Image (cartoon, rainbow, N blue to C red; front, side, top):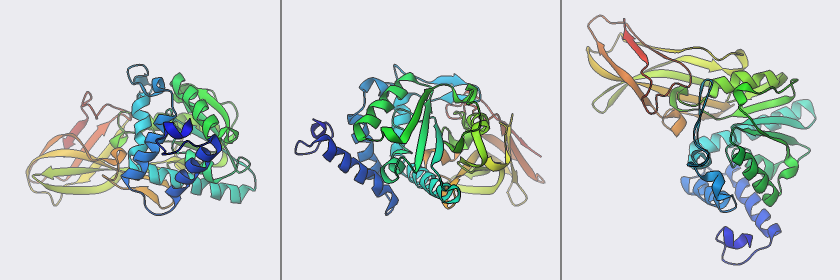
Length: 328
């Protein structure tokens, strides 16, 4: 029985489970949520999933244009990153509500890079009707699509979904512009490793005029470390989704060194993600905004500027790509 699967004390009917799960999902829009809340959601979703869909040894990382698609088990676990999940879940629903108010019709959403749970969309499905919003769900791993069908059917959200697409989002023909909102979170710190910008550039072609890309913007800046102190530069590189149709060949971040003492410093990149409106993931609040070391530099007397550059999706996480870091 469903109740046994999710660890409830008594056996419950499918309808009782659906009521329980919808209520649990809706709680994300209330008070600030702690890690324990998202850990519980993960365990519920895991318990009703096909175990193969979460097996990284079966559905591993896939190299794409502009980055790497992470394994399905890793993608499923992202829901436990509480600040990231809260801001994306709330930002998505607020964007949908704003679009619904302005258009007066059902909002069509593409959610690219869903993983096996499509977790960022589930709270909206729990709190909005199918005639308010409809999702197309896309992931590169076939088992993700199969597991999504399983979960959506079990929790009663199938009517919220138009298509479940198994494809590489960076190389898929969406046909005519058909979506009011396109959302994805396929990024590593500093826009490294995963193909966030490549996916944004490719999927924006499917956006209707006046549509929204989520996240709205990503800002990057440089940080110098000395012992336990950090010298933070301003955010000097930004990707604003409404203003860009391309995936840049290089990310180029700068930092003013006018007030920095001479010496050797590890160099890090900091990240800020604006999902929608006030839903912002600040540096070091989540894995995707974790300050990440990308190299070292020697600051000499009279140096005025630090520069760092690397391609979007470059593997800075496991340090298989060395960015260009220079001082002038």
